[in-house]
Length: 118
Length: 109
Image 1 (cartoon, chains in turn cyan, brown):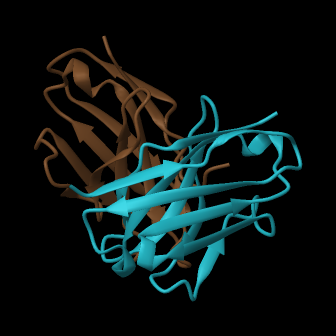
Image 2 (tube, rainbow over the protein chains, first blue to last red; image 1 turned 135 degrees about the horizontal axis):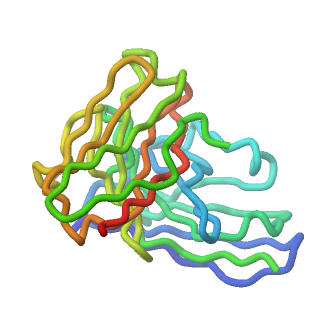
């Protein structure tokens, strides 16, 4: 079964750091671009970051640029999001999603991990 | 603020046909194809429609997508109670970054 499972969320003080993980299974992780998407409480979806198959290119939303770093370990089928200088408006559920290049779509999503900055 | 605009809410009765729109200047290119995601309460988003009008695997034929100019639509026919959810349009921009509409809450009356 194709699956993404996020972990690492929690409660953190403003200015603090957190590292999220997303473990992939059921597909060849190293062949897929991966993304992070977040959802603030009661709000819509916001794209956060993406990374290509070999981590040579990354991209970030303006609101997290310089504070968040996306990375991956293809040997361990795991995607990461290192978050620093966290702010209250970073609070939300963070989803990892598989990016299907030829569709321009996120075709598989994890269940999310909750981050609370307070 | 989303560059894709959706109505905040739509509603319909069981069996009815409803349409959710998504508009924005970034849609006005052949390259920018639109996707639609369904998010049931408390769940992760799920891809319904990709490349404007292609149904994802397992998605009932009641769901259909279309795009024309700077506007796209998701139509749901034969509305069912389990269709009550939040629906998001989305695309990848020229940098292959994600962009989402603000979401539309569908209520089945």
